[in-house]
Image 1: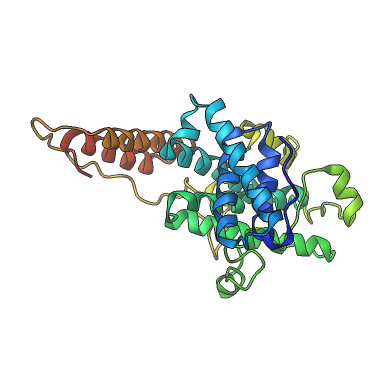
Image 2: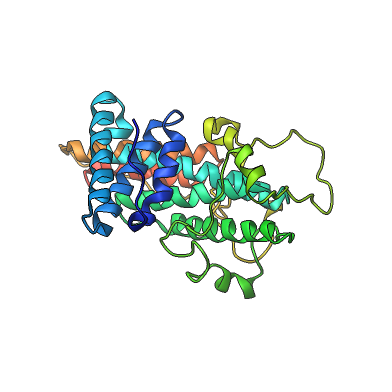
Length: 311
């Protein structure tokens, strides 16, 4: 479907529309919720001009078509399933970018991954307030995308990984491009190699000390097309001091099992059943990153809800 051009007055939704366009043929769930969030933001920012109305109506029509066409896709029709899908996708991109950043594999691919992750965390606001971990990842991804982008543009070598404690609070603040809820709009990375070579001719910076020989990291294009290509999350040895983005593998304490006493005759509602399913999905995602503690906690929540009817 061809969409009308985005007028300058709706500049705040351009990055969401761009992300949706990139995923039309890759992941319809991401494309759907990116346009839905763009619509929500656009309706609030609209001055009701003819150009704005034309674009917003086109987005509405597309959303209705997708919902009918993919009526059997739970991640389009169920908020909890959608939230889990987007959270998992955003986290995979974040961990990929964080790993490449710490290994000093700088380039526009890592900027693109950080940038897209930050935009995805913005989209998660559709479902309510973000968790503390999501807020950390969102802010960190945005300022890292802006920071590395500016370093490459100016021919400077970025500092890999988190910044020292005395700098992190300033660099992670809202005064940095993308530090607020603007989706890092001052950073405009692209995953089109041809466009990259024509824009500012920035080449990836060679690490000061060659890393251990390994398989060439996938490009941002490959990552967005096939998230399974993502490397494993960073291990503990790769975490220097300073501001730490949330990484599910970093769990200092083992989970403690709390016995749950079932309540006789408890009646589980449909909404509670969906919530229990959500906890089980989160537990599965945690195990994907070897986060046993969180997996146990989510499973305990599901078991308590199904056994007692309360959380």
